[in-house]
Image (tube, rainbow over all chains, first blue to last red; front, side, top):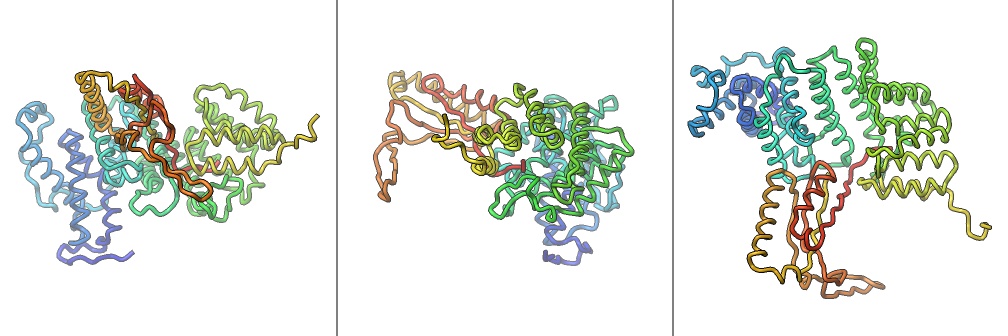
Length: 441
Length: 120
């Protein structure tokens, strides 16, 4: 990565390359938004103003060098935008604002950057990331709205980047964000989180959104799409940030661990032709050792220090897989025990699907199939390709190729993923062929 | 999830309508377009040229055969499409239900496959 050195006038130091600027802006975005929101109370306008400031910085900082106080610069520009906007708006809107929400006159004036905030680094106490996450992940918003808003307001991604990540036109994504912000106002979602809010439940909602973002990125086609934001990296970054703010929360650590342990496998999960490789066939030497180590350390510490929760258990399962240098060394009994624990903590038919595989590895395929039978009628799994795929896999293990073939084909028809469909059809063709007609009675 | 809403129509249905009725239905299409644009669900959409403007290409034995007309000759034909990105199938169906031609012909809802996937 080459850095373009800007004029030395601002004494900006090393932050001049575009990648550095982008990193810095992402780091600062939620901090600036949090500060602006605490003053101005209008999330819609505040978020737009901060976005504009970020875009201005994206253009100016690589050329001129980053300012000595980047956070102050952004705050000043965003504040100015808001003041301009407020002046252009009808006075009717200003009258609607309660006296408590109006900013004191002396704070309207954009102070010199140095006066606002001299610190470049932000302590955990200043970081409004958590409060912003509570806002953006409010249960009153739809999952796609939560995701888009989180990526914008907390992640600092542009609408263009988010649209690219989800393969929709920019106008479509822009509209989703507009609607989400309208909903925040309509529902009256407060910032910061009120003292009497149920923080644990709200945190659970935040973790769910971060995991959604991670999975969206993880399932994405690996390949070079230059302008597509790396959603897994973004999810991990946000989870790290959350972990910094809540170092004692076991589920936050568990989610971060789960993300790291999963992402570690990324390079190994596709074959030379871009097809998907199941866990059992992956070259484990290609798993990222550093991410594995971090993930294992995180989940071990969390399990030791905090009450156990579903993300920690899922991370623990991934860690047990990670600790086997070869698939044949996998400690399946431990994995099974962990699935049984997960089933108690957060029961779901999808957990049962994964558990059935572990049961098959420990007690044989018939036992796994029997467990599958208990959820075969579950409405959440109706037509879900994973049910058929797991059944196919277990039938293959049980030496029932005809039934396995039918199940693989059923799963292939039901999946929406082209690589998954290809994988399932390939497995079907690898099965022993049916008995020729002449041998039948 | 992305879905393709394939709008089928029977021109005979439209032909027997009064101009008022036709305009009312076109107004419904306009309103529907606006609604899914505002909601951020519309990814793409367009009406298609009349079936009489269709051309079908087949290659048989290495030879190209071009025929005038749609792939399947029938009273009903494909009139247009919407590509939407919505929360789930139920929502896609709810959108399809609102399309005027659903009342006279039908709207097929097909999930769009994507190139992503996770290891099994």
